[in-house]
Length: 169
Image (tube, rainbow, N blue to C red; front, side, top):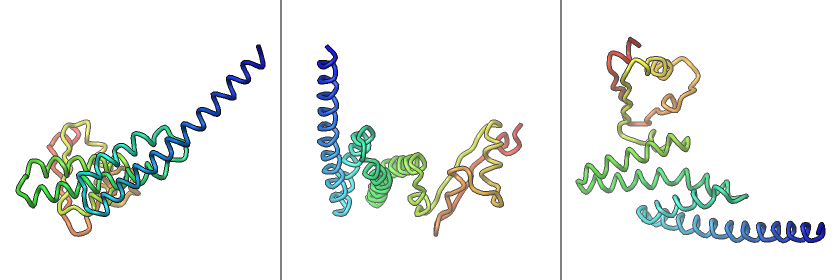
Protein backbone atom coordinates (compact mmCIF):
# COMPACT_ATOMS: atom_id res chain seq x y z
CA UNK A 1 0.00 0.00 0.00
CA UNK A 2 2.90 2.37 0.82
CA UNK A 3 4.50 1.69 -2.57
CA UNK A 4 1.21 2.53 -4.27
CA UNK A 5 0.95 5.89 -2.40
CA UNK A 6 4.54 6.76 -3.32
CA UNK A 7 3.90 5.79 -6.95
CA UNK A 8 0.73 7.93 -7.08
CA UNK A 9 2.56 10.87 -5.46
CA UNK A 10 5.44 10.56 -7.94
CA UNK A 11 3.00 10.43 -10.86
CA UNK A 12 1.19 13.53 -9.54
CA UNK A 13 4.47 15.43 -9.27
CA UNK A 14 5.46 14.35 -12.77
CA UNK A 15 2.08 15.39 -14.22
CA UNK A 16 2.16 18.73 -12.36
CA UNK A 17 5.65 19.41 -13.71
CA UNK A 18 4.51 18.63 -17.24
CA UNK A 19 1.44 20.86 -16.92
CA UNK A 20 3.54 23.74 -15.56
CA UNK A 21 6.07 23.43 -18.37
CA UNK A 22 3.29 23.34 -20.96
CA UNK A 23 1.53 26.30 -19.32
CA UNK A 24 4.78 28.25 -19.13
CA UNK A 25 5.22 27.65 -22.84
CA UNK A 26 1.69 28.90 -23.45
CA UNK A 27 2.25 32.01 -21.32
CA UNK A 28 5.50 32.69 -23.16
CA UNK A 29 3.79 32.31 -26.54
CA UNK A 30 0.89 34.55 -25.49
CA UNK A 31 3.31 37.22 -24.26
CA UNK A 32 5.24 37.08 -27.53
CA UNK A 33 1.97 37.51 -29.43
CA UNK A 34 1.00 40.49 -27.22
CA UNK A 35 4.42 42.09 -27.60
CA UNK A 36 4.26 41.71 -31.38
CA UNK A 37 0.84 43.40 -31.44
CA UNK A 38 2.16 46.18 -29.21
CA UNK A 39 5.20 46.73 -31.46
CA UNK A 40 2.90 46.83 -34.49
CA UNK A 41 0.85 49.50 -32.67
CA UNK A 42 -2.17 47.22 -32.75
CA UNK A 43 -3.17 48.13 -29.21
CA UNK A 44 -6.73 46.77 -29.33
CA UNK A 45 -5.28 43.32 -30.07
CA UNK A 46 -2.50 43.67 -27.48
CA UNK A 47 -4.82 44.57 -24.59
CA UNK A 48 -6.70 41.25 -24.26
CA UNK A 49 -3.49 39.32 -24.88
CA UNK A 50 -1.66 41.11 -22.04
CA UNK A 51 -4.70 40.55 -19.81
CA UNK A 52 -4.56 36.85 -20.66
CA UNK A 53 -0.83 36.70 -19.87
CA UNK A 54 -1.55 38.22 -16.45
CA UNK A 55 -4.38 35.76 -15.77
CA UNK A 56 -2.50 32.70 -17.05
CA UNK A 57 0.84 33.59 -15.51
CA UNK A 58 -0.35 34.22 -11.97
CA UNK A 59 -0.32 30.50 -11.19
CA UNK A 60 2.66 29.45 -13.27
CA UNK A 61 6.02 29.14 -11.61
CA UNK A 62 8.68 31.04 -13.54
CA UNK A 63 6.24 33.35 -15.32
CA UNK A 64 6.79 36.28 -12.95
CA UNK A 65 8.81 38.33 -15.44
CA UNK A 66 6.21 37.79 -18.17
CA UNK A 67 3.41 38.86 -15.84
CA UNK A 68 5.44 41.92 -14.80
CA UNK A 69 6.01 42.81 -18.44
CA UNK A 70 2.32 42.42 -19.21
CA UNK A 71 1.41 44.57 -16.19
CA UNK A 72 3.78 47.26 -17.42
CA UNK A 73 2.55 47.21 -21.03
CA UNK A 74 -1.19 46.82 -20.45
CA UNK A 75 -1.76 50.38 -19.13
CA UNK A 76 0.37 51.78 -21.97
CA UNK A 77 -1.70 49.95 -24.59
CA UNK A 78 -4.95 51.13 -23.00
CA UNK A 79 -3.60 54.69 -22.83
CA UNK A 80 -2.80 54.54 -26.55
CA UNK A 81 -6.36 53.45 -27.35
CA UNK A 82 -7.55 56.45 -25.36
CA UNK A 83 -5.36 58.74 -27.46
CA UNK A 84 -6.77 57.26 -30.66
CA UNK A 85 -10.32 57.67 -29.38
CA UNK A 86 -9.60 61.28 -28.43
CA UNK A 87 -8.17 62.05 -31.87
CA UNK A 88 -11.26 60.47 -33.41
CA UNK A 89 -13.55 62.69 -31.35
CA UNK A 90 -14.86 59.81 -29.21
CA UNK A 91 -14.37 61.67 -25.94
CA UNK A 92 -16.37 59.33 -23.67
CA UNK A 93 -14.39 56.35 -24.93
CA UNK A 94 -11.13 58.30 -24.51
CA UNK A 95 -12.01 59.24 -20.93
CA UNK A 96 -12.87 55.61 -20.11
CA UNK A 97 -9.56 54.40 -21.56
CA UNK A 98 -7.49 57.07 -19.80
CA UNK A 99 -9.25 56.33 -16.50
CA UNK A 100 -8.67 52.58 -16.85
CA UNK A 101 -5.02 53.13 -17.80
CA UNK A 102 -4.55 55.33 -14.72
CA UNK A 103 -6.22 52.78 -12.43
CA UNK A 104 -4.09 49.92 -13.74
CA UNK A 105 -0.93 52.03 -13.58
CA UNK A 106 -1.59 52.75 -9.94
CA UNK A 107 -2.57 49.14 -9.23
CA UNK A 108 0.54 47.76 -10.93
CA UNK A 109 2.86 50.50 -9.64
CA UNK A 110 3.54 51.92 -13.09
CA UNK A 111 3.19 55.69 -12.88
CA UNK A 112 4.98 56.22 -16.22
CA UNK A 113 1.59 56.40 -17.97
CA UNK A 114 0.36 59.04 -15.55
CA UNK A 115 3.58 61.06 -15.76
CA UNK A 116 3.25 61.18 -19.56
CA UNK A 117 -0.31 62.53 -19.43
CA UNK A 118 -1.16 66.11 -20.34
CA UNK A 119 -3.21 66.48 -17.19
CA UNK A 120 -3.65 64.33 -14.09
CA UNK A 121 -6.60 65.11 -11.83
CA UNK A 122 -6.99 63.81 -8.30
CA UNK A 123 -10.32 64.07 -6.52
CA UNK A 124 -10.65 63.96 -2.74
CA UNK A 125 -13.91 64.49 -0.90
CA UNK A 126 -15.01 63.93 2.65
CA UNK A 127 -13.37 64.51 6.01
CA UNK A 128 -12.01 60.94 6.08
CA UNK A 129 -9.68 61.87 3.19
CA UNK A 130 -8.01 64.69 5.15
CA UNK A 131 -5.11 62.64 6.54
CA UNK A 132 -4.30 60.99 3.19
CA UNK A 133 -4.63 64.34 1.42
CA UNK A 134 -2.27 65.99 3.92
CA UNK A 135 0.26 63.22 3.37
CA UNK A 136 -0.09 63.33 -0.43
CA UNK A 137 0.39 67.11 -0.60
CA UNK A 138 3.41 67.19 1.72
CA UNK A 139 6.10 67.89 -0.86
CA UNK A 140 8.91 67.72 1.71
CA UNK A 141 8.09 64.17 2.86
CA UNK A 142 9.45 60.98 1.34
CA UNK A 143 6.80 59.63 -1.10
CA UNK A 144 4.81 56.83 0.49
CA UNK A 145 1.60 57.02 -1.54
CA UNK A 146 1.17 56.27 -5.25
CA UNK A 147 -0.34 59.75 -5.72
CA UNK A 148 2.92 61.33 -4.51
CA UNK A 149 4.82 59.63 -7.33
CA UNK A 150 2.67 61.21 -10.02
CA UNK A 151 4.63 64.13 -11.43
CA UNK A 152 3.70 64.83 -15.04
CA UNK A 153 6.78 65.61 -17.13
CA UNK A 154 5.14 68.27 -19.30
CA UNK A 155 1.50 68.11 -18.20
CA UNK A 156 -0.45 69.56 -15.31
CA UNK A 157 -1.30 68.07 -11.97
CA UNK A 158 -4.63 69.19 -10.55
CA UNK A 159 -6.26 68.48 -7.21
CA UNK A 160 -10.00 68.86 -6.81
CA UNK A 161 -10.91 68.74 -3.13
CA UNK A 162 -13.90 69.72 -1.07
CA UNK A 163 -13.73 71.71 2.15
CA UNK A 164 -14.32 68.66 4.33
CA UNK A 165 -11.25 66.91 2.88
CA UNK A 166 -9.24 70.11 3.22
CA UNK A 167 -10.17 70.84 6.84
CA UNK A 168 -10.84 67.30 8.07
CA UNK A 169 -14.14 68.45 9.57
